[in-house]
Image (cartoon, rainbow, N blue to C red; front, side, top):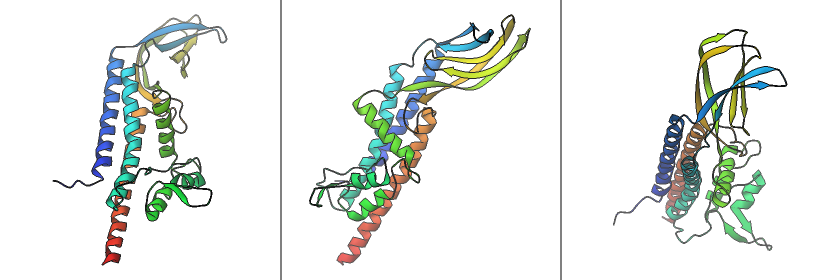
Length: 268
């Protein structure tokens, strides 16, 4: 029988999360290649101008949002798997309450790490070894000043997608190029996204103006309404979170090995 490193599990899960992110991006690009948007020009009664815009006439398909759900779950679960792996490596295989602690404040993280009964005794703990609990709390997974707000926000997002709804994703316009343009009466560039109509206004011309031009725009996925993550580009944000989580997992493994080595020295 080959003895596996307990930390193989979180590392494998983290790699899988990146595969989900790549698949999410690929599915979104397939959606864009269908040309799901149309150009339009409409009158603005408030300014008496012509509004030039692009409207997405197709919603982002669930084939994209479901994969985003998988990515969020894998990223967040990697942290729990790392804590469990640490407990196993330190000789505590029969554990049911291990978890990565979170809180809306620094004190909240401490309370999540160790839940106590009314008499002060420990009812449950995120890790059976006090040194490791202190190490996890010191990672500051909370949104207060000095905390790791992005990891905290990932936890909030995972709780929503696990229990209530899929990850809400939107489209954000990136680079915009107007070329071969002929505007008889001037143009005023604009960059305004209307989320309720899924439309992007990129220019304004006087109401009597005649115009011909070529428009090239790039679009990318953005994360919907989520504390600290809302409005950020989904693919880049998930990659940044994965890199951050990888550093946390490596740190947990290193600290676990240090404690195991110290314990071994004391027992000799």
